[in-house]
Length: 578
Image 1 (spheres, rainbow, N blue to C red):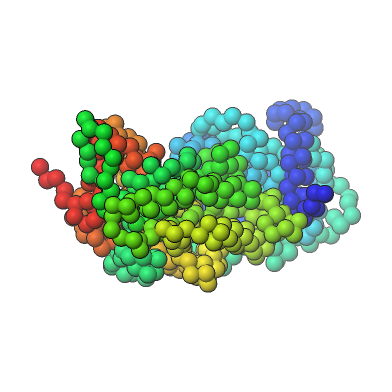
Image 2: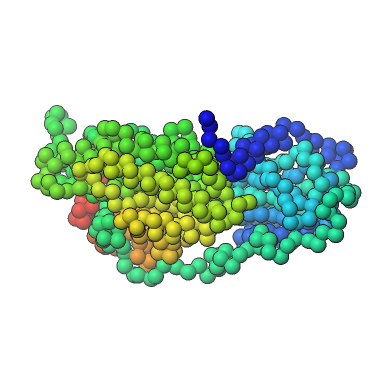
């Protein structure tokens, strides 16, 4: 018999059904609404925001109810911009209880500027400001095929409710821009139970303004201690990791593909069919991760599309990770094979495994402990404390399952030293609190918590406060030709100031473009010139198994990337100054 679900899971299913209903029926355009005797009841009405928009894109005075809509340019005054911190709540006071038929919210979609539609938008109404209707939800995928830049409307239709207060909740991953909230209905006062003499919203309503914690997060932003030294390679605080390469499991890894990362073999004569002779260890640590499941569920972010991963998908990642003769098993076999020619019988390669990000818009994550209760990761409406407990419970169950499978496999040549926080930024105060809890959990198990924030990420300099054992900073110089070479020094200086490591980055273009190879080699030169080549822990990002492709390449310039990276890892790389 199917286990019963808790309220969060049941609500998620109801939300989906309601969303389909309200999308299927419509009064139509504003003209049609007005022709049906409807009025925009929200026009000119006051409202409260749970968090104010960013100062660069502010609310210039009741602009969400002023009747002015934005175009397709985010700099237009009608738009206000909200950045990260999970969600926003807008509460509108219609001043009296009136019949409400439709609520329409305008959003901007411009991915090139990092502006995305909310993953989910919720609607609630209230007669007295104390008791609210069950949320109705609209999901981003229900907008259909998206073009950009464009303005889209989340329309809650066919409502037929009486309300004085209308509350719209939208979830924020990166940037969300909103311009107008319209509440269409009949401009007449109706008598309903509880509507007489309603004294207004309660003073302790947590969604009428920012909390002290969020003010502190947005304010002076305390940072990690100033170290003026990189996080050292081989430090016990990072499980002894020195050079950690990212291994994406979107495709299968076999032993032959793992070997060139585990060990180094010198260049061979392409005219001869020789078996590679592995003469030295290469990377000492391997970070296993994935951004999405085989069916496209997102492990880290849904900002650019896709549905968030659930418990089933988290377990699916572990299934792939522990597939016999692949992934972990392939690297276990690779170390064993390399030991046939490298005299180091006690050597064990270090392993770090990702923690999928518990995306805050997930309402029905799944049952992680066999209790029959499906977890909700949304802070609204269950509250932030319940949200934190649910997200932590999912991570605790995931870590426990990883440990169980690791013990069963009993690897001889691999050592699990830690886990990796997949999200590359801290999405507000709630993420910071959660990471602190996760860090304590892992510390009790003797495991380290790793983080690799992108350049300028929210909270990047607060890594120690959050509880990470080690953070490695991304320069993000590789991926955009408009980013100047000075970025590498800027990132290195930031990493040194706050005691972080440095990431080396390569995308697939280095295999086909001399200019792009030069961009990659600039990382190595900067490391040698500034000294972090030998004084810093490193992570190595590679798209499409770049170093494997370089190792097998017959083009000396491409193969040279593999040899140069090996020399860098060994601390003996000498830049070509010709």
